[in-house]
Each structure stands twice: as C-alpha cells, then as structure tokens.
Image (cartoon, rainbow, N blue to C red; front, side):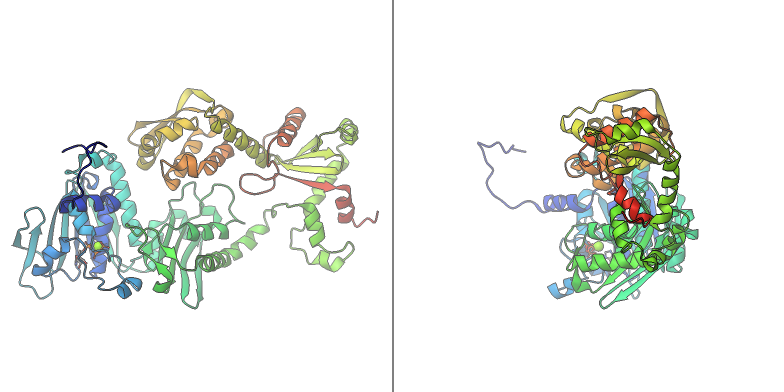
Length: 596
Ligand SMILES: Nc1ncnc2c1ncn2[C@@H]1O[C@H](COP(=O)(O)OP(=O)(O)OP(=O)(O)O)[C@@H](O)[C@H]1O
Ligand SMILES: [Mg+2]
C-alpha cells in the first residue's frame, strides 16, 4: 500500500466496500462479547423462546448462536449480510418509535467483515433450511428446525492489529457471560444456555422476572432487596433494589434497562446512586436491577453504535423520577436502620436553628428518635470529666490554632478538641482522608507520587477481568504509584504502593488494588487520569486514611488538627460529608436551654 506522506497526498476516492465494513465494525465489534450481543439481540428480535450459545476459545475461535425464532427466507439471506439492510425499520418515524433491539442493519455486515460468518435459517413454511456462507456467497440446503443459526469463526483473523487487543480466552469468556446475563435479565421468558468448549457455563430456564434476576444477582441479594414500582404519565420504573447490606466493592451487580435495553447512562446511574446516598457511604456499590419504561419518543437510542448509551429528552425530570422511586423503595429499610446507627452529625448551629427557638418543647418532642440532644449528650458527659487544663489554657490564648488542641478521642471515631469558640468535633477518618487526598493530588500534579515497594509482594485472587485490566492500565497504575502485575490467570501481585498509603496497604493492599481496578474499569482506560483523576485519587485516599477504631495518642491527634488547618477544603471529606463541626459555647447554651 502506498503511504500517505504529506507531500504525496492520495487522490480522493471511494473506499472499497470491505474496508467500509471493517471500519464500521471497529465501532461495534470490539471483542467476542460484542459479536455475541448482536447475535443474541437478533435472535430476540426474531421472537426466539430459546437461545443456545456455543463458544470455543473464549469466543475468539468460534461463536454459534441458535434460536427458534421466525427465521429468514432463502432469498433474503444475502440481504441479512448486506450493510444498511434491515427488516426492522423503514422510516424515520419507525426509528423514533423503535421497539426492536436492532435497527441499524449493520451488525451482521460488520461481523462478516472481521470474521468468517455463515447463517443457516428456516422459516415456518420453508421446505428445508438454507445456509449462506458469507465468504463465498454460496447458498446450500441445510438441515435444521425452524429458526436461525449464525456461526462466527476466527474473529479478527483479517485484522491482526485488532486481534492483538483481545485478552486471554478466560477474560473474553467472562465478558461473553456478562453480556448474556445483561440481556437475559430483561428477557425472563426466554431460555438461555451458554456452553464453552462443550461445558455448560450458564443455564437460565424461562420463567418469572424476579426468579431470573435472583439467578443473576449475588446470592445475598435474595434475602435483602426491595421491590421498586413507580409510575407517572409516560414513565414507569420497576425492578429490585438491593439493601445496603448487599453493597459490593465493584459495580458489577448493577443492571439498568431503558425500554428493555441494557444501558449505562450517567444520569440514570447517578439518580440511583443518589437514592442510596443516605444509606450507603463511600465507595460501596449498590446492587440493583431496574427497568425504566418510557415513551419511546422521549428517549433517543440512536446515539451510540452499540446502543449502550441513550439520550433522554428530559433528563432532569427522569433523574428526579428514578431518584424518588428508588428512595421510596429503600425508605422503609432506612428507617429501620436509623434505630441502630445515628444519622450523620451535621453543622450543629443548623441543627439548633432547625429545632426552633430555645424552650420550644413541642419542637423538641417532634425530633426524630435520634435527635441532636441524644447525640451530643455523651460528648458533653465526656468533656465534663476530661479536664485537660493545659489544653484549656492554650486554646484560650490569642494565637491558638483555629481547630484548637485535642482533649480526647471518642468511640474510636471522633477527636474532640477545645478551641477559642468552644468544642470542635472531628471525624478522624474523614479528615485524614481529605488530607491524604489533597497530598496525592499535589504529588500527581508534580508527576511524582513517591512509591514504596512492599517487602513481600501481596499475591491475591482476582477475577480474570481484573488481571487483564492490569496490563491494559499499566501506565495509569504506574502514574499513581501502584505496581500491580499478573501472577497467574486469576492472581495478581501487588508489589508497590504510593508511599502515603504504605501503612494502610499493609492491611488491605488487595482491597486497595481491587478498588482501583474497579475504578479503571468503570471510568474507562486512557482518559481516566484526565477526566476521572479526582475519583481515582479519592479511592486511593480512602485506603490511606486512618481507619476508625485506631487509638490515637494526644500528639497524633494534634498533628491531625494541624494538618487539617494546612489542607485545602479540609472541612469536607471526599464523599462530601463534613470532616469536623464546631460547637460554640452559644450552641451548647442553646442545647441546654440556658439563657445567657
Ligand atoms: N436470528 C435471526 N433471526 C431472524 N432474522 C434475523 C436474525 N438475525 C438477523 N436477521 C435478519 O437480518 C437482518 C440484519 O441483521 P443485523 O443484525 O445486521 O441488522 P439489524 O438487527 O436489523 O440492525 P442492527 O445493526 O442494529 O443490529 C435483520 O434486520 C433481520 O431481518
Ligand atoms: Mg441486529
């Protein structure tokens, strides 16, 4: 091929057909799982009641999908493989109201451009089945019952550059299984069977939606979920939301469907996340399976070649609707939990104000079960018998530091300090997390996150997707100071961590590593450091911060206070919770209804 050097520009000319399809395939066909998605969606569009999937070599060597749907007539077989040929829509109006999973008329053509494809099919009234070989274009009689069988062999054999991007067979198989699970959760009435090298990997009998979802969800989900059901004109949300007790470190049990199509949409997942905000903290990922039905004219599915993203016409209204629907479903359990753990302590001045004028005993009585009075009482009792006279004198002096001096640690969670205005209460984990986060941010900006090698590498079991992830994300991992390498098909070795996190990593290195890989997977590789830098650093910081229940010596507590003063935004932790509150003497007086 002539090279397109700047000096000898090629004349403009049409691209050959095969090349057009190969370029188009680049958008849709990334790996065996993407082929499988297209084939299974076609089977569902054809009205299949049962779909059989056979894979070899993780789907790289062979994918065979057989359905019992309506089939394709003999004369139409070549058209099925033609680009921009579809039986699903005929006009723009059809596209705007599309009810099938496919509509672009591109999938089979794209697959045939990058793999060896054959289609065998038989309609109800045909005398026999016919099989089309895409390469030769030959059609010959074949033996099979009603339905369609598409066989895809040697993915990317024509485009070796793309083949290089495929991961180990086990990884590709894992992606295939995930893909089928996603589709299956929205089609409970269809039976799915997936075999790899002759071994059954996934068997899903036809049945009720809830039973199907429970089969796909983590086991603990069965005992701990709430039904979601909400309806408004033109929109409906149904499904199941896992209770906080089944939250996970990875976002791998989150299924969201728009009109039967699995989607990953920032607005929608944010809405669900926000619904969990009060009951789930930090990086914990809720488990859920939710189905949004919405007037097709209010959603555009034709924004992404693989249709995994949608555009909602009125996204803020939909956001509110989903948020409230999920919140309402969770509310009952949140109320139950409130009896066991206190609501987060917020700015006390606000709380005092919210309680109404001092002395209003009715407002007092109307407080929820764990009112501020009860929350504060133990702190005050503790203060009474923790003299700390030296701290008192120091705190009163004019040049005392803003956050004052530590007087005690409470319940392994809070540091109490005395300053000029009164009492300061610090959530020590949240505060430390913010400090570590800001330090990491500065280090990363300077392109120098100091690394500390572990004396003994920590080897841990990891799923093949994570193992593959380390190769894919090696540059990012290196930039944030992590040295993580495959130690087997399903094992990883953690060899070095950012120096700031060395202490925490000694205890939970594998957790740290998994959380980071989860982020990389969720946010997508190459741009993660530019677009999701802060989220990633927040994950690191969370692991670097002192855990609750660690006893701190007085000088450690004071060091924490001084660092907080020196750190930007130290009054908010990375999850948006406050890191400290000030309780002034006036606040205290109000709490005790003492007129000053
Ligand atoms: N399993 C099947 N059973 C019956 N017909 C099929 C099957 N698979 C494909 N077809 C026919 O072949 C046509 C082309 O399929 P293809 O997947 O390329 O495009 P599409 O499904 O129409 O759109 P998209 O590119 O969005 O998937 C379909 O419109 C359908 O008529
Ligand atoms: Mg299709």
